[in-house]
Image 1 (cartoon, rainbow, N blue to C red):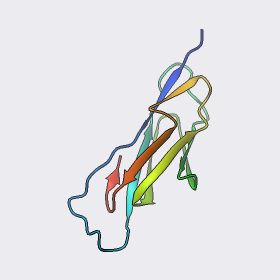
Image 2 (image 1 turned 90 degrees about the vertical axis):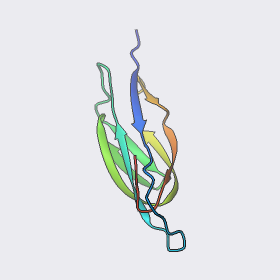
Image 3 (image 1 turned 30 degrees about the horizontal axis):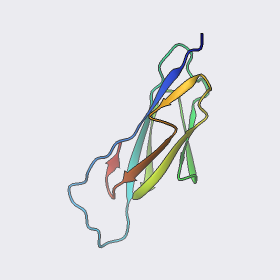
Image 4 (image 1 turned 180 degrees about the horizontal axis):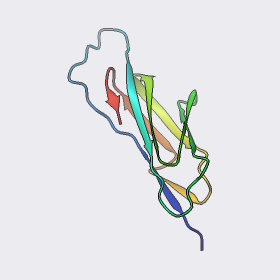
Length: 103
């Protein structure tokens, strides 16, 4: 019997109270969490790639805070063992707002 693990990749948004779009683009903070459940976790963790440019390693259950330019970004989770399943998927698009924290 094959056991599948579900690895949720959680990202959300917090809306800033004010925004001055006339100035230069500013960074925001992206908070990414992984949570692995089941009896045989992926022991070597995962690799989160942002826009195919920068990478962050994550443990099977972990949280990373990443300063990133505001705007739309593509997150890709790699290094997932074959017996694991990622929800909602290994590819996720997010919008990071200036001077805000996106979860």
